[in-house]
Image (tube, rainbow, N blue to C red; front, side):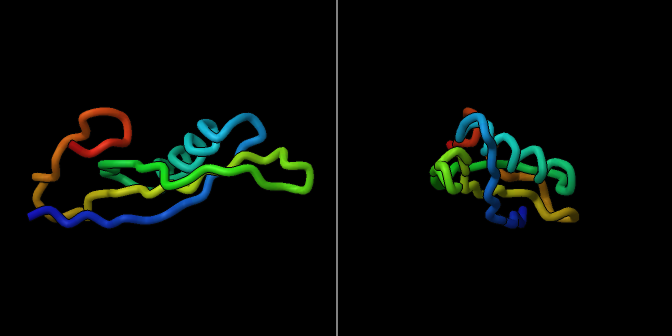
Amino acid sequence: MAVVKIIELVGSSKTSSDDAASQALKQAQSSLRNIRAVDIVSTGIRGENLDEFRAHVRVAFLIEGTDVDYPRLTSVGKMP
């Protein structure tokens, strides 16, 4: 049986909420292996001038040493 851990991250960008989500995933990929899914929980705009896009994401990754029978993604960030 596979064991998957889920963490929550918030990415930010001056460009767009999509870029904010990408920034969160990029950071996760720099320190995590076996990422299996990314779900965007919410997006928003923050900052004094409302010029900072944010994306709250959940990242699921396989715990090493467990079986790899976790379902494959059907599209970017979506579980079947």
